[in-house]
Length: 340
Image (cartoon, rainbow, N blue to C red):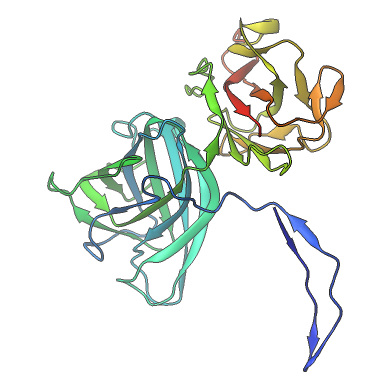
């Protein structure tokens, strides 16, 4: 959370300060993990291929809490002053065999950048943070109004690893999810990430939903009850569906509750974040985040303030429109947070 005050200046005469403006940013500033960034290939390297091309690779996350992807450096094949955009799509499991299957992929982030000096200099691309869970995720990055630079894979230059993460390359595709992939090809750039997640995942994996993925929930921010800076991030849900957060101090394990698919991972007195601003749409990326007020935590029909030393459990419920006869709702896994 940040607070700003502004004032205008007329010539050399400053005006009065405004009232403070408080906002929550799009994600945590990258914090030190075992690595924090992972470079793919030796810049500048390679050449460009086709405008609006797509680069494919696998990201294997070793960090048991997952990682939060925050920024990329990429070597766009563009002249100085060119503006380009970057789409990042992911899927559970490897990208291999799914390069021409658009339905397998979920759009996770969209960012843009300016090539200030032109190739072979890199450009920083920032975007709303998104999470990758432990295990293998296929990644597809489509560049718009430019082209990717790449190197031809030779077996020795296709895998890059640190204690948090491994990137395995790869392929290039001229028409996204349509034309035949060209392999082996290695994207040039730097993968920046954050391991700032808090809490402990449990009740994992969730029952797969209609897009074939097991939805997940994570917590970022602070586990300090006094700081009141906790955000819950639910991902890998079906696109454009309604969802909300559930919470309880008690864990549970109830299969197919109330005719829903999946597992309710909460017990005892369960609270629902269903007030104004808390019922969310999963959107194109199949995800949403909720900044929760720890001083007004739903518990049964009441609101309570979370105290240091208490453990609270969180889970997301969401609509899931699948084939006829399939239950119309599902759940993520759970995350347990011990507050201090």
